[in-house]
Picture 1 (cartoon, rainbow, N blue to C red):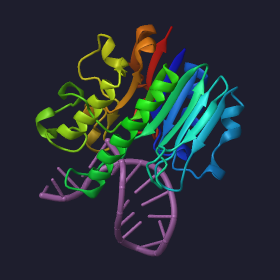
Picture 2 (picture 1 turned 60 degrees about the vertical axis):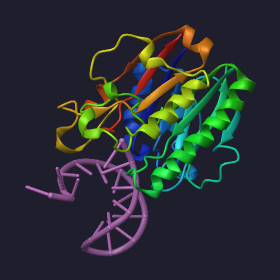
Picture 3 (picture 1 turned 60 degrees about the horizontal axis):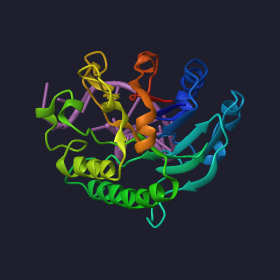
Picture 4 (picture 1 turned 30 degrees about the horizontal axis):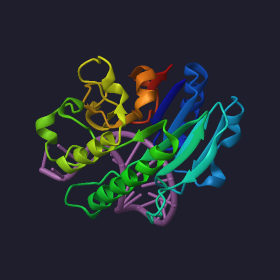
Length: 254
DNA sequence: ATGGCAGGAAGCTCCTGA
């Protein structure tokens, strides 16, 4: 089973890239973030025409998540139960017995910002919720844009980013709290090239100079992690015309 | 030097992202 996550930074703009990617890479599951589309405008038919099913939770201008799957999506859940939030950042479903949780973690803007406090509260609520989900489902995959670079090696210039949003100690602690639930960072189960990133700033030729961060992740519960045979970042779509600033992350599970 | 891209909604400029 091939599972993937991709922050597309507007599905309206990136629909062509997504459809091409589905055709060539043939994932079983693709989680999307930052669709920036109200549900009424979601391009369901385009995705279904490729033999996929899709569920989505979106809003105008900001946020928006979706799960695309070859197999039926059951027990669909929108948002994080018990966490009052108008922002569409989480959608879950069960596929072939595996609980799939697609997240778009708040950016946080800066560590002094109220948005940063919202981010930490959001991550805390997610962690509490996932504890229950893991208890109920056993096999769970958490995929998405975490907006956290877990370690210094996930940052092109750790000194410049030290203590900044996406890299601060509380954010990294929140990431480790998810791992403490028994979720493994599938990317780090394998040997990887140095300076592997999943996001590069549009500005200053960030991609060409590989000035990036690894903030998009696939976390797997124990038995899935044991069956994981590889995890890679597909930089090819980042080289296309009008790319998303994020690249897809892909995990292969036996 | 806080900028530098990009997307979206609004409207000829702003907010947000990371």
